[in-house]
Length: 54
Image (cartoon, rainbow, N blue to C red; front, side):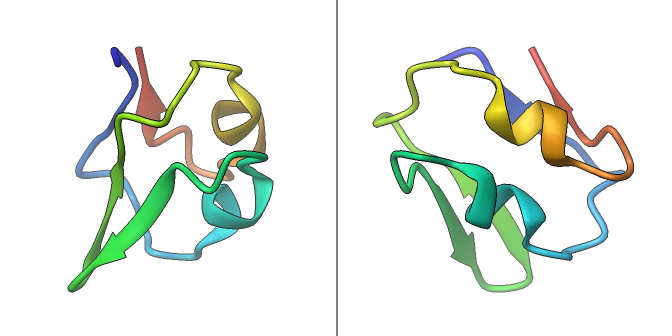
């Protein structure tokens, strides 16, 4: 699991909706990518502020 959500995240939740595996979860006031992630990059493509990096 190499994808990370950085501090640029605005908490919009677009990545959660875009992930076909449900591998992004809300953890308090941040989002986390879980080990179910297969690095399909759907979340990267959906993020309006480019907060998901590999």
